[in-house]
Image 1 (cartoon, rainbow, N blue to C red):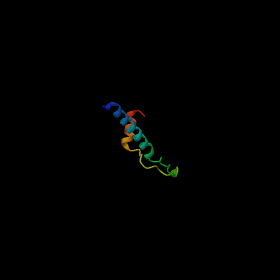
Image 2 (cartoon, rainbow, N blue to C red; image 1 turned 90 degrees about the horizontal axis):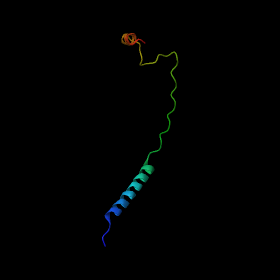
Image 3 (spheres, helix red, strand yellow; image 1 turned 120 degrees about the vertical axis):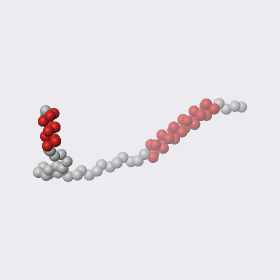
Image 4 (cartoon, rainbow, N blue to C red; image 1 turned 60 degrees about the vertical axis):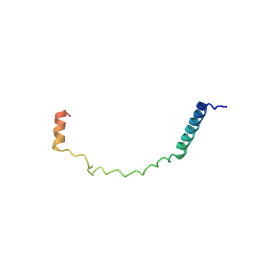
Length: 65
């Protein structure tokens, strides 16, 4: 008796998808824990990074800000 290959292939694909989904769910890492809050800088301390330079002033003048 000859086996119908399409049904066995479909069954294999269904089982492979099921096991792949289970493996993904069970093997996924735990969610990351939140980090501790860092203290906010004091208001009187200058923040590093942004500085009003001549180029910035010129940009503000040309942009109409």
